[in-house]
Length: 72
Image 1 (cartoon, one colour):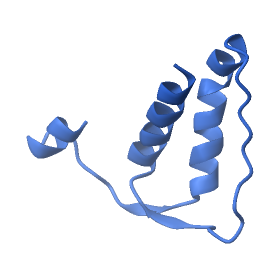
Image 2 (cartoon, rainbow, N blue to C red):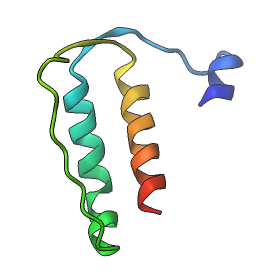
Image 3 (cartoon, rainbow, N blue to C red):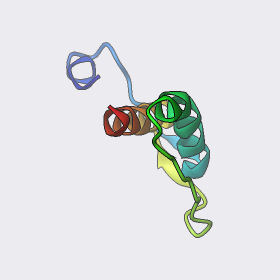
């Protein structure tokens, strides 16, 4: 994605979103792979961090990548 941003084929769109929702989605995507490897994922959202301004899709993808790498 970084190379696509640099060459202009991917645009970052900043807008307010709730990080806990992005994290919950990422945990949901990776949870089956984690269960197959007998790895527990425990998600406890921090209510003091309610809204974030950034690219929702990019942040969600970063979280999915991090969790997927951790499960591997």
